[in-house]
Image (cartoon, rainbow, N blue to C red):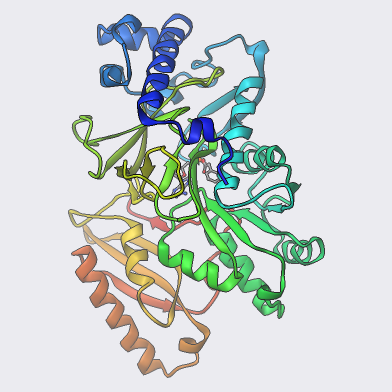
Length: 431
Ligand code: DLL
């Protein structure tokens, strides 16, 4: 079902005109109301009146995470603080958190884009959402909450963690939808299996997973273990939270809600815009946000865009699932390595689970990479000789994919720490 056909299936020429108008408005608004942006525009000698439409977007300055930290907490506010009704921040694990401040209209917009997200998967007012994203400053919990209420579904605000209770609630309340990180959904599946739950007997029908990278193979695993259809949903605090892009029923790339969030792909090195189909850094401009509008935010996420017509009828541009991050990139003995490359190899190998951790050390000035991977119960009960063979086999495949040697260590099932939120994939002890 298309939640809002007027905008989601708008003919492209009309959409472009709408985006142009919104861009002109937002450029003028941030120039007049946010000193940070006035200074940035002035430094580039660009005035809001130079912007006629989206074709002029490349003339505007970028905004980076560091910029946002420099003006923490309220430096990006484009309206009176009195108009703000809710505030969220990123986790701030690598520095000062970034702040998203929402007006009433922004919360409405958020509910609307999350309603689109859930409708894409086929959810509606008969559904019961078990919302296992964290509530609090993190945007996952409340974003999903507002969206579920907007479509008229019943929302159970269970938040993350307490897996035993998650299973009880799922069974007792007959949850039909689950929202959490993809890694936590697998954890719930494993815990359920141990409790002897047959997921095919439960009403659970679909899950909307995001907030961390995953893969099509991991999707297959989740769909098989939980007996659901699993959709990828994407978003970030700096833009609104979840509700920036999501998969439709065809589960083939994510539609970007580009009437509100305008995407570009740029070269991370030069900052130059790249054509459709080329991989690069994803950049967003918010076209309608009131509280903290953002111009050309560099997400550090890597993907590409596709404007191929989608069979669902939506006209919005699609992005591939996130392929990596410019700042997740590890440089190991001079070679660029992304954790997602490791995952892609692991999911093709029998006998291991997609629970893994990369441990990087520096020994005698040389970088070493150890990849710890969980075995399946079956492999674990096998002979040691066979397990060692398996380790060598995985090392060989990783060497071909990463072009750098790693040491693979197969570890006991369930020995890698599980997270109720985002999984921690890399431990870099070199610093
Ligand atoms: O993770 C918002 C969110 C909540 C999205 C719930 C989806 C579901 P942040 O904590 O600010 O916001 O983290 C944003 O997480 O730049 C990506 O690197 C990553 N990310 C988010 N969704 C996906 C996804 C929320 N579907 C950062 N696939 C982003 C891969 C994702 N990475």
